[in-house]
Length: 291
Image (cartoon, rainbow, N blue to C red; front, side, top):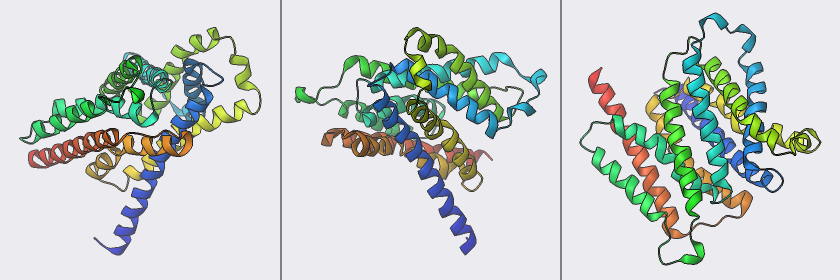
């Protein structure tokens, strides 16, 4: 690898790290907004403003509406709405890093389902061990909320469906699929926000500014940065780095929210990340052998 290639690779790694920090920082900001707004309102507004921003970034006016396969777009949007709403509901009851770890089981399960290598059992074992370690046995004062766990796992299931739905042909580009899916998701959650009764306060300053920042951190900025990183990174590098999401979330929760995890919960994050990295490595190795 030449010096210029090395620099390009390093820049891509930094870009992807910034994207992950952006997403997890948005989780901390969303949790702060829960003090004033219901979680479903925050989720709906995040998708609404995110869709508006992406409509400009991805030039929604260039979409060929006649080619859109709406069944694929709607299923994608439903999964996106469920993933966001359930995750934000879980954040009301769990530390950010723990919620992301439980949610991360969803995409990890998809990867393990399609994996067929001899080491796969090891990664499954790591994932299961990570889940077990997340529960602070014998330390009731730090007990995790059961409903929060169920909501985070349900968000992970929607994340898995989101991955599967996103792979279906939509008739338009990947960027436009993301924009349309986010629009559908926003329309699904918007009635819940309207029923909350305080949606008018969203458009008052400084609240409007905070929701726009949330949409940028959670959608516009990471999507744009990930696109840049993907042009310079291999799928293996990209997948491996994205496996660090739970750890980045835990650090974000600690820095912005003062959430402190127990040693066994940090170990749980490490085992889940190990399972994800290992699964990424073996899956990419299998693909190379098939090519």
